[in-house]
Amino acid sequence: MKKSLLITSALFAAVFTLKAQTPSFDFQNWTSLIGEQKQPSGWLSENAYTSPLVSSSNPTSVTKDSLSNAHTGYSMKISTVKIVTNPLPGTPPTGLPDTVGLAITGSVNFLGGSPSLKIGYKDVLRPSNITFWYKSMPMAGDTCGATITLWQTVSGSKKIVATAEFRTGATTSAMTQTTIPMNYDPVEGWRWADSASIVFGSSYRVGLKHPKIGSMLWVDDIYWGPTQAPAVGIANNTVSAMQVSVYPNPATSFATIETNSTLAEKVNVYDLTGKLVTTELFENGKARINTSQLNAGLYIYSIVAGEKQVLYTQKFNVTK
Image (cartoon, rainbow, N blue to C red; front, side, top):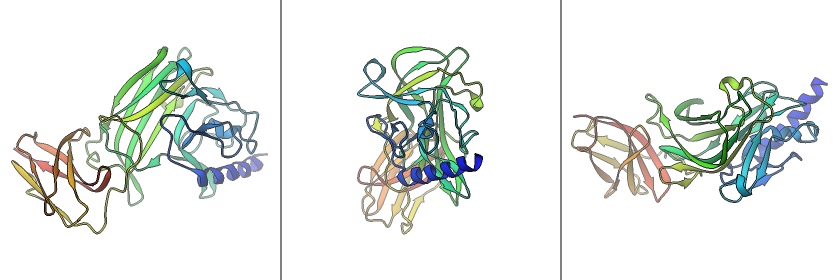
């Protein structure tokens, strides 16, 4: 029986990997790839286990909701349920617990000999916060919540750039907007993330302990801040052929950023909280930044082509 389940899970994992896609953040697009109960495009949930390839007797955890349970159009409703047949027991990123109420940006893959969850999606902005609408109805003693993680992959290793967390043990009976600040890592926070994961849970206690069947969380309309731009990806953050220099570094009154790229149009400068502090245009391959009004410390500059294509990101220091 166990061998049969692993083979079955391998089949649906392979299909899911091939079909992975950019997540839907307004929850208008729902798909069923392998006969499972529909779930939001680009999201992973217990619904994958409702496929006939696993067990049609498994309950549905994520459903589409609307009317008073949505901000606009449809929302994602997450319910904590008990999985009857669980081919991937455990906790993310290697599996799912038997009692679960989770929705995760990502997919399932079958690489290295065993099925596993592939968390996250590629290409993100550098936000100072994340905003979404929610409604919560946790069972007594349970907690609804979310975890957001931004990272950059360097030589096969994840460098965590920023994180954010949301927790509530209270009942919120109407759709409510909340904005959660992104906390940039003091060591790796200068990097420009190339991937992100967003995890929502109707049961989201630390370590996924003590989930209560029947807890519910509704989520709708996710945005990266502060511009309220929809949570969508952008182009690559580096161009290997580019030559870039910044001088003087550290800077006191002014810093000049110079590049050989003919695509460079402007440079955005951010503090370590992700706040945009200034923007300067390139002229003849150079952009001059007035640092006299900036506090001493570490800043991130991002060379941009057009409105969204980030060509290069690096850090520089300001001293007084």
